[in-house]
Image 1 (cartoon, rainbow, N blue to C red):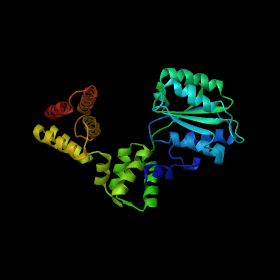
Image 2 (cartoon, rainbow, N blue to C red; image 1 turned 60 degrees about the vertical axis):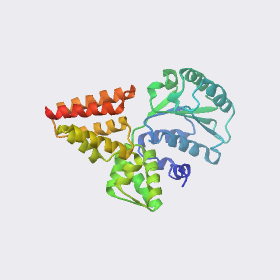
Image 3 (cartoon, rainbow, N blue to C red; image 1 turned 180 degrees about the horizontal axis):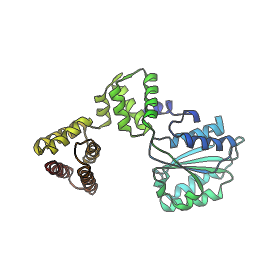
Image 4 (cartoon, rainbow, N blue to C red; image 1 turned 90 degrees about the horizontal axis):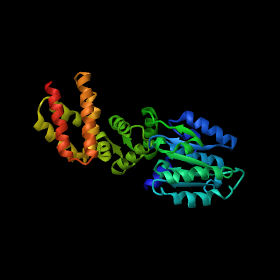
Length: 318
């Protein structure tokens, strides 16, 4: 099945179907029931329902005419001031169809807008407030200028819990007629880290390969190493066996196609489970952060990863 069709199939169409944001949904639903609302800002990590809730608002407000009264623009693709001056204004200056007195402009990833575009947006929000409502979606509300934030009711979304993601997995597995092992389901939820969209994407990819999904398949498709293999690398290093730890590290990276930063993030997760005192763990966390910073600055990833392994060896000696 095409990814866009799959995504639309499992996208909620009513407020009752939106997962994990109960308090936010109730407050937004109250606006829709009154058929009046302020400008809205949805802030939070990716894949937690911001765009979905904006579409649900449009569907519930306008019914069958929602596509004529709703426009979605992705600000990360079109981030200049011309987007606000042309596309947004052209849509905002016309009246809505039906009995709702306003249309909705949904600006996705609006934290990618330039400051000049945000300044133009603040004026547009004032000028067309009688005919248009804005829904702004962003990952980092701190990147939105204060004048725009003050014109919106801000809702902060949180990552979905493991139980909520499990409900999503159970529904998709049942509808698609596939089976998934308990270990694969746990790995899927752990990899997603509260991102419902990633759960759906990983499940679609695994289901395309086989109707029986196991833990190895999930890790392979997600390009994430099995945590036990990463733990083995750290145990070898802490046992002061640098050569074997280095070989195991390279084998894991090549087997799963991991970058240096991906590997460091997985190593950092395993530090908490190591059998050592908390002070040593804190130092290893600091070492992981320092090496990750060096990689983002352009250092050679293999040299830096070997340097990190050497620090684990020294920590094991102490």
